[in-house]
Image 1 (cartoon, rainbow, N blue to C red):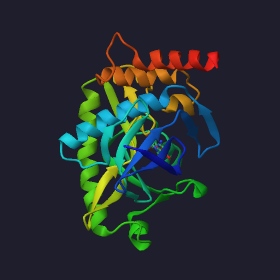
Image 2: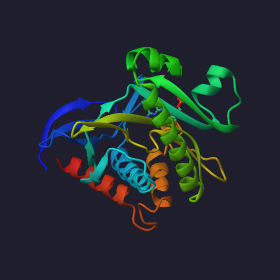
Image 3: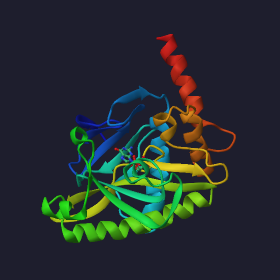
Image 4: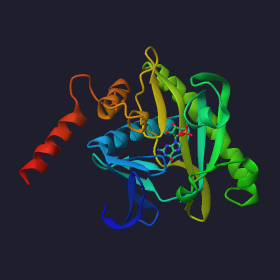
Length: 260
Ligand code: 5GP
């Protein structure tokens, strides 16, 4: 499939057109940003790992009937995905209170929630992705009541599935962010899961030690982000215990860059 012009560049990904108007290519960058772009860096190999981890999770979700935008992974950094109109809402699912909710509401860090808590944020960098109520979504037509009900049902299933998947490999799914989009084809529109699911968009803690295996390593200057993401990939069975695909490629990349 031929890669066309760049359609959109976000903080962690680039979207390119293809010869098929219903499909685009999603490229995973190595850029890491936090605190609404105030903190930025490049972490070699992060995009490669997120591409693989997100592919694995979305493929598993497909198998339990969660429709999503992934068509197939193309290479180390790219996937073919369905071209959707993104609903401008970040759907945040929390199983354990940490991060922004602890500051916003004074909840003790690490409080296990009785039920998953769903929060909505408007996807707007200039406004700092503000927390909004369901009523705002309806009042401003960001999604219809029907779409919201559908999304909420999907979210509960995604959360149940992901909690189990990560629990099986010794990881606690603390919280995560999801995005959904409208896929239009043959005159029909359906709501599907979009974006990525990776350690960039989830908080993942080791079940025994509570070690952080996610983007908080960057946000909180904990270091060793690539080994943590690699650990997630290995535990999910994406990378073999012995072979360390990502670090081999990162080392290769470094030596290629040095030679230039
Ligand atoms: P918090 O609201 O505590 O900062 O984030 C809650 C969860 O949603 C975390 O897992 C965090 O990674 C994810 N999340 C929230 N907003 C964003 C965002 O703009 N980008 C990414 N990558 N993840 C986000």
